[in-house]
Length: 224
Image 1 (spheres, rainbow, N blue to C red):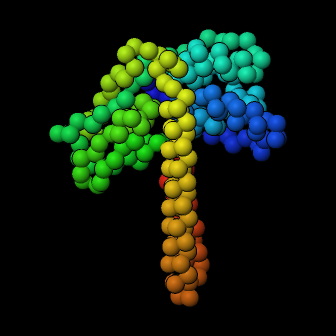
Image 2 (image 1 turned 45 degrees about the horizontal axis):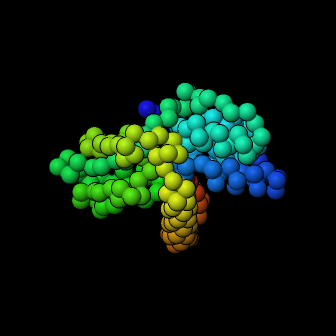
Image 3 (image 1 turned 135 degrees about the horizontal axis):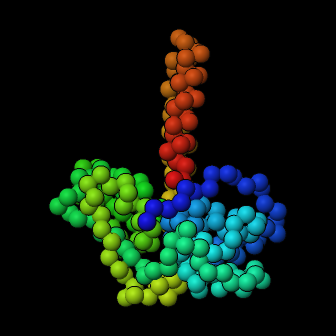
């Protein structure tokens, strides 16, 4: 199932109370970073729920138990999971069919928790223990060589996932985001230095080229 388009409207800086509530909401989310809730990541959804911009029933991986916990925290009535965002189901992980993989690295770029390893033009592999089952790697694979397998023996929602796994997933996601931001800054610096080297010959052209290059780098680093 394809996820709804993530909400692209950045919220204003939240008040300390809203930010604190968002952290507590985020602690109750499964941290699959699957975007099925309609937001770019779990924390963005937590921010939206805390500010009243989103209801508490848009997280399929958390399922009914996740909604129950959010309702208890917020003092709100429990709601059924909104089917627009998917259905509660067993936890699934992906694996890559070795014979078909061409090593394009698109799945590595799509994985929000760095659970896929490999090098360009070499077969990739999934670290099953780290895979959250977000399925974001499936649509980007040009060879259709990524498949799903059930990993929770039919258990769904929080019965198929643990707080320890969620915390580990949050940590891996944060580390990946920090790495992407660092890489973007380094590339930005490199491009700025390159533009400065030719600025003496054509300052206007160099400034335009540098601005366009920085925009491309930032776009690549932005969560999809």
